[in-house]
Length: 393
Image (tube, rainbow, N blue to C red):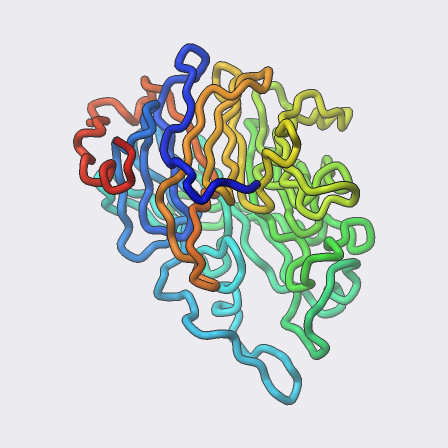
């Protein structure tokens, strides 16, 4: 969507009688800061990382923060180099990954004061994670595919006439608290090279580009893959139980389980096959493929984020939506009525081109009686300097 060059940041709209009261967790994309925001739109707590550029965060019942990101010291400072004879990149796998959106190198748990209490490093981490009740963590990792499989994947475009690096697919990995691998699902074996093609407007560097992972109480894994516009459920045997996506969704993000067994999806709408691009949030019944609830802008162009973004269903049936590229967090009722709107005032520089951006990958709302808040100070006056700096007071 477009917005004014004089856009007001922070809280811009609030209907207290209809909102789900709590604190909103935000992590401005590619920055080192994580914030808790109160219902008045002010910062009440701040975590600051020394070198980790944050991608996604969640609060644990202990009050600790679980965060995934990339160590800024691993991000290449120069453009990729190519072999003049073949046109092929001679970068090692580890460095090539740092040029892909959502790349990560560390998952860590920090306490309320920002001290690391647990961490796990992984070269090919990216985008998302799910902490299970037993302390295990599930996350996607990139996997280089064979040339034979890469050649068989339909779709996509290439801006290179010479050889390209091996195409990337995705594995889903589960580790225990000691970092030991418990299970691995090779999702690239579950998709069809012919029937799950790459969007024709996307490069052939990646087949799936998994951007979210969720796990239900039965242990079934729910994934969203951007490049081939697919949402899938993987059962405990490692088989694909359900597949949904294009042409119904386009480059969607954040597929999540709802308590009724349905799946909520942020349908970005980039590169829709028909009509203009617009975003929406949908609830899909995986038994029937029926969309039983949806939200979109009116007019449609009023709500759009071409990438990142997410949506969380709140306990009172409201939905907290992250329109990622604009940095807007919008709470709506089940009837689609806006009740809270907050714009991210924290701009960071893109690692790719240095462009200033207020991106938010995802936001979460925690109730006032959340166990992790017990005994904690949540007072905007404790962060007066930050709140003044970003004109939130």
